[in-house]
Image (cartoon, rainbow, N blue to C red; front, side, top):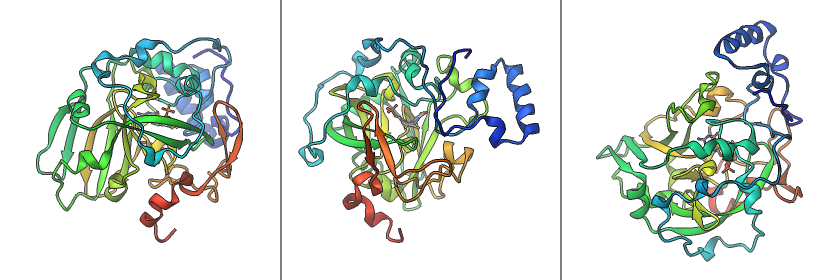
Length: 330
Ligand code: MTE
């Protein structure tokens, strides 16, 4: 972690957001674990990771990331015209080399390299909580049991960058409707894999691993909520969350949890990864809203990751007609 990190303008040095003594204690603790000052300097500024300016810009993300043969059946899948609004797609390479996947690194343009070590087959998904038959299912078995389609969605990160990408997958509601949930099931909690040797970012014990997220059952059943198994007409590359991840396009990107290893149906609202770190900055609901600034930056506009164009952010990321009924008090 000795590389020079270009930090985003909004990320403060940790000593400015933490008391000096807490900072020093944590610093000693992390140094004992072998973390360098470089990673500390990034601090836990929340979902505001950096880019490595030293990385050669001409490098291609390796195809072995993308083409896990086990998941390659039937691609590409037909695009669903209902979600095709004629938007220009984000450049594929830009999307594949500008990622957040904190289990590997907080440096966006290194994620695709580091995540290439992730073993995604076989891949078991645990299903538990308030339902008739808790069980485990293999990701391939699940994917093969669902009709796949392509949907073009806008995607808006809390860090104020955005992209337009064609996901392949199936609506989460189609999966949940097969599971015979009990009436007590009011929320769905999602979890990514636990500690693995290849996920070296997880050795940073300041984060509440494993990564987890949650939705109300009504949000989970909304027709927009999607389980992505592919992107740009191919199975998901590992940096995008292979073998399958959530896509909730009206919420900030951190709700779209990658590499799902467990789902659980709960009575109570689950605590999420980011909410545990800072409930003020990353509340459970986290709908895209240009009128509510993040405590440390504005959410009024967003930057397209390929062209750099700055565009106005829309309420619910432009999906008002689909989801505003879920939030009558807003
Ligand atoms: N899922 C896991 N397991 N770990 C993560 O660090 N980052 C989130 C989300 N899902 C993240 C995750 C954030 S902050 C964003 S913006 C999106 O993934 C980025 O998705 P992308 O890299 O496919 O563009």
